[in-house]
Length: 248
Image (tube, rainbow, N blue to C red; front, side, top):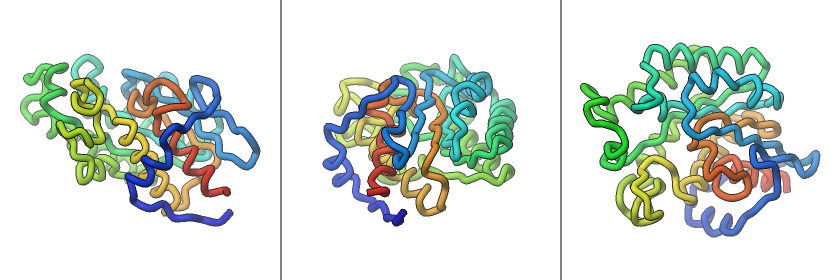
């Protein structure tokens, strides 16, 4: 297979991916041929690391992945599904150990940024004291990088990329949902363009670091799951499309 380089061009990616659709099971994308990659969308809304540990065997390892892309932590750090930092580290370490012991490669992604004023309409501000929401996110992201280093797995700080170019806030072209681009005071979940960019960035990282591109499980919470489908707006769906393009 000839290797191709992905270009950092969000506008071109947006134009090229408009109107894409695939048929498939609502939980994952089936291979349409032996030459195409299998990308499993194993994201579940509201999940934290406790939930992922409970379902890693059934929803992830059962697919015998060559690569697992893991993004989790947004629910762990917030009110309602809170997991203290020391337990979060222990849970993430267990997940990394189980996944790598299976023979799969592992790519850990940092958490995406959020628009704090929106976040604080859903979670009490005092809950995040003394460090504040951004400080807590930084602490959890530091744990992700630490676990990746200690387990010898790949780490990609996708959150930093979003911070630098995503215009996280109230603008219509923000990569996170807001009132201007979705009619919602969300500030956490990506827009369709955000999911496309997420797939582009992760795909480029995978290619550059020569990680497996055949049997991939995207494991995580609602940010991984997207709109709940596998044929519209999720980063696993766009990632599969990118990898199909490399085989043409």
